[in-house]
Length: 81
Image 1 (cartoon, one colour):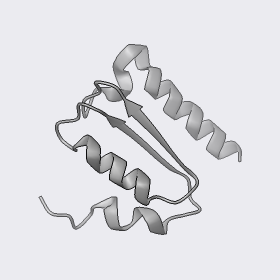
Image 2 (cartoon, rainbow, N blue to C red):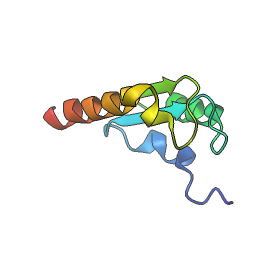
Image 3 (cartoon, rainbow, N blue to C red):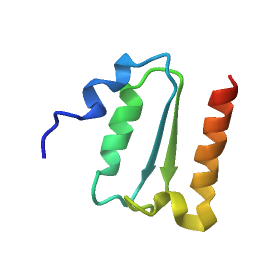
Image 4 (tube, one colour):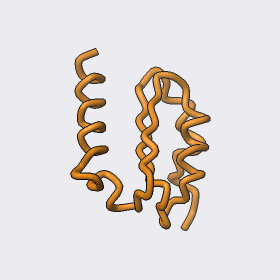
């Protein structure tokens, strides 16, 4: 894999566009620390959902879709602003 399309070097340039990072703490595909780095580099407005025990593909569906609902609510707030 290459870093050619990595958001790491772009995330701080998109402000004032809102940024949402939803990342599972047990993601074996993209390490959780990478989500933390992105969040630190992003400028406001920014939100992070740290999903306990979430994997790469199941994080938003865990706990009866708890974080999926949070993501949809976040999108609703952003679209209304």
